[in-house]
Image (cartoon, rainbow, N blue to C red):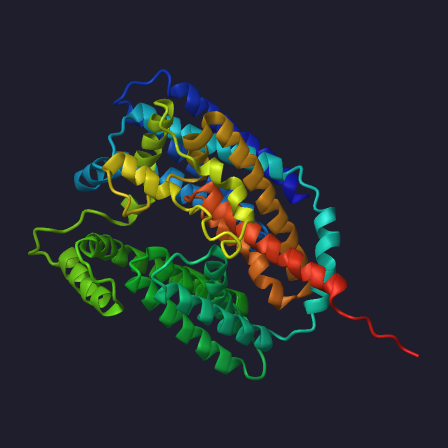
Length: 468
């Protein structure tokens, strides 16, 4: 059965849940939390079935179908997360709603927006015809297919490390291209882990060293995702090298516990950094030590109530976004769409395309020092209402469909140097909690411009040799 057709049927189910939730939001009371619980548990049960069936299709499906990753991410952020408002502790609930008040009515409303947005995204993807993409990408795959895994590993490691150093040491605004290149370190981890054969043990060791280095730097950047993502990539590589469900479950449990361990200290560290004028690595190390002590010292009276579950609950900022748009104070994310195609090197005064989260935080708390995410679909509503939801869902669905097509080509051809492009759709799908321009359209534009440049060089810049 064709995968797009499967997603078409799945989209109808998610859409049905979404419209039921939208209708329920108009008839329930502000304290009818049972409706949110019933909705999230029902949809989560269906999503788990889809995820299990997807994993049973094998590793090839996982690597080449970003929509499977999309549903996993959606389930965590928009189904498990909202359940905190019902089953969480009093401290956790009070901590979450202290940012913005929430009722059962608007909690169900934002859940319906997420479900309808996901349904549109999946439905659009089912009609995508990738034949044109296949014909366009094939020459690039043929050209780069001669490179070995080891050579690609060193290429990614060197470029990624240089870009990573620029991002970490620069006090000024760093271009999105440099930030994307820094992610090549993650691809070096993956390639070094899956490599087999002669010299593979050396690459395995280097992959572990890069994982430790980038995770530690992520901690010092007070970023949960930057601290844990290298470990997740290493786990993926271990699974690809030796498929073992038992191993992957054990390691994922360790990763999950690790994430739960660092959530409170990093939240505490961010608060402490705001009160400090020193942004150096040495001061960050000191702050992190203090944050761990404050977060887990039973005698401390200044412990943060933030935990892993609170990190997954986006309901308060989503409710705030809907309320602000309805009051005529919506965001400007869509106004930045066309700026993503203009490199900052050409136009230094280019607007910051990731500013929407800071602007929302400023509207609610009065401070622009922190960026607050609301998710892909509610972010669309925050800018253009229901029109924004449709626009964001359609374009994002097409973007992931393009990556899925390219990924299938790359995996089937064994092109290791193309692995970052192939897997980037999966990473992008997992960022469903981000903003459309900054986390979907912007990265897509940068990758496409790079690809078109390579394609142009292949067609015009490489002289053909003749044989006599």
